[in-house]
Figure 1 (cartoon, rainbow, N blue to C red):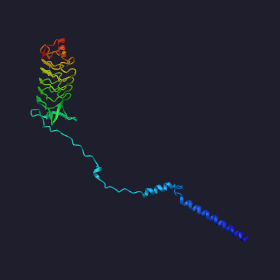
Figure 2 (tube, rainbow, N blue to C red):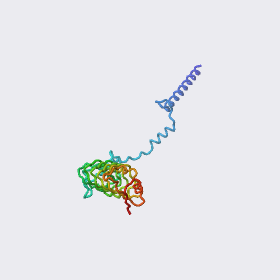
Figure 3 (cartoon, helix red, strand yellow):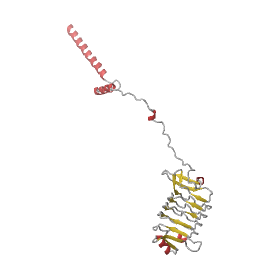
Figure 4 (cartoon, rainbow, N blue to C red):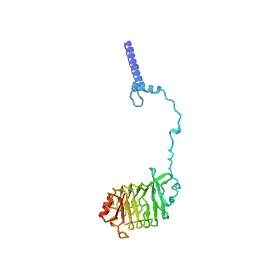
Length: 261
């Protein structure tokens, strides 16, 4: 009987030891924060990452990472670098554009005889802006350079004292009302290079006596010529090449003509 009790006690002790061993092993394999057992593959990957070779650090080069971009250089033309005989630029407002050309925007001076420069600091002057000389009543003469390509809308409108102006052979386009109300203008030549004109270009040019149009394909239907009450009492003489559209128009509207050979 006594031996039986000893055996029973030994069995109980053995069970307890087994239970404690199991609890100890579970505690070692579990995550104390989440209560979950870590995947052996994850443990292996983590170990491999730690064992990987760490690359050597390169020295920091401040030139590769500038803190700010230096400002681009702005080109300002020399306002004294113009044609020797040209009117001083301090009497004009002008602009040098991104395409490397210059435009005359306004006349603010007091000279009466103007010579427009062909270049400003090496940039060619190619355009007369909208209303650039409008109502400059005291200007009597304007000489345009052979770099001008465009004369914009009403560029010389209402220049009441203007009696002499040239249109260079470089001009291709003349805008609406460009010479309207130039009541002192007596003659004008529109070169063959001009392929585009707009309405009212010569409206109310009362003193016009001679108009030469060298492009035979150019039409003057809407220039305002037919509505002019000429001071002389007779329409201006229109000069143009044979078979020009302008000659046909002139005959239909009782304008005297002269053929240019």
